[in-house]
Length: 83
Length: 387
Image 1 (cartoon, rainbow over the protein chains, first blue to last red):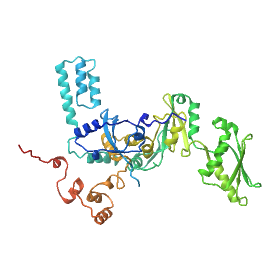
Image 2: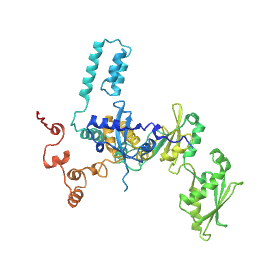
Image 3: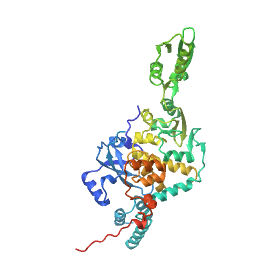
Image 4: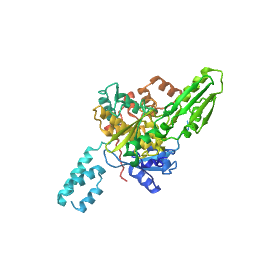
């Protein structure tokens, strides 16, 4: 067996953090947005599983951007719709 | 530069990269506080000027910026991308593949990086490659069809097994099981002699020659070592370390192999990346793949446009294609969807479902001849009554 896979350590995976209630409030008021306007992420996404995010959580993603150097993005965790 | 200035840079509302450039430029230089303030204001002003204006149609700009150079691309480029005769689809076909979010690219490949202990030594790297490359049974010994006794006999070559680091017992156990499970052929019994490294396959129907030959074919081609989807592995030295390039892709299984660096190994199959590493990794993969495909052809497109496309594709938690089965097909407005592709179907379905078009978007407002909500058209005057 190789090293146990930790997807968060892969170079292509940026940092993921679950946001606290306060941070979410702050985020929504600075950008004047609602949860529905955020990009989404499925609850069974490998990264979501790794940081133990539940559906309804909001994840802060710290990307290494080619233009800005460091860029923050947010995703709302949702349940994958069954087909 | 003084500490106070450093703090001022940190506090400024500038992108990290710009701050970094400022620090680098100013470090070791003696600037007065007055000069520094001037520099900072100038940088801030410049930054504000280069930002995208509110209500700017960035999507249209991105579409044109990718579309125009795209017309310059060679229609059919199948060439060996320099990497030890592994064929990779490049150019326009590849770009279309990325944008269409195909489940499987036409030439899936992986770039497997190795952990330090394996990466330095060619023999060690080769060892890892054997665990990955799919090897059929006939590579491990002689297969004979015994017509008289109606059976297939395999004499394993112990030397080959040793060289490939797989015990003969493992093959003896694996081969019959894999024929049943992977190749779905079950009409046979098997027996093996551990000491002589000998396996015997006996078909259940001992009357038919056709059956015997069919069995022999399965025995010959059953994969007993490596990952089934990976047809070929090429070991190459790049700089100080050995890297494996594969034909065929299976990230999940490759990560399980001992010696594989699970933090750098990548695939060109974007939907596979989304599945194994998550949606953010898929976004990065789209950006990198699209950029390198374009760059390979000598076409320089700003990353911002590609980032926008990648963001759109990954917005809903899974990789969606640009086009009628993805982004364009899921637009709110009926008229906007009808304007894109399969017009009649959309109008018909909308009529049946009694859909209402709110006329919020750009396309639908152009169709009905109203001002669009872009640029100055998006600004509304709001009066604040004095209480």
